[in-house]
Length: 139
Image (tube, rainbow, N blue to C red; front, side, top):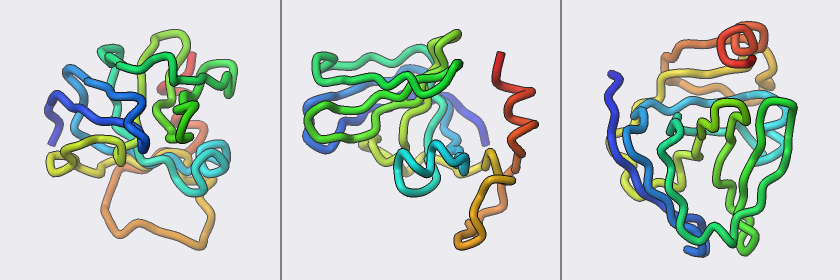
């Protein structure tokens, strides 16, 4: 079920707080090698669009991770804050950072052709390969 909601959250140390207006309530899992290297496993995130307001921006560091995206993290505690598309300024924020998580629905797995065989989710979700993701989301 897709609906838009407002969400708030913070990093581990509380040095960065954020508010998201009109975010999607669906959770995506990315199995690409870069996301797994970044966080030690799949990135489980929420599509938050452009309407993200950060407090404590002086604590945010951004890593230019590809031609089309960058990743933000807290300089103080290292929490992963976002994956952001450069061209559209749209954010994906890790679901674990949100204060209220009861309204989320896990519905999409991307880069499933890169997922290692040692884990698997029981949830039935839509699945997209690397080629399908690039065709749909990348400029």
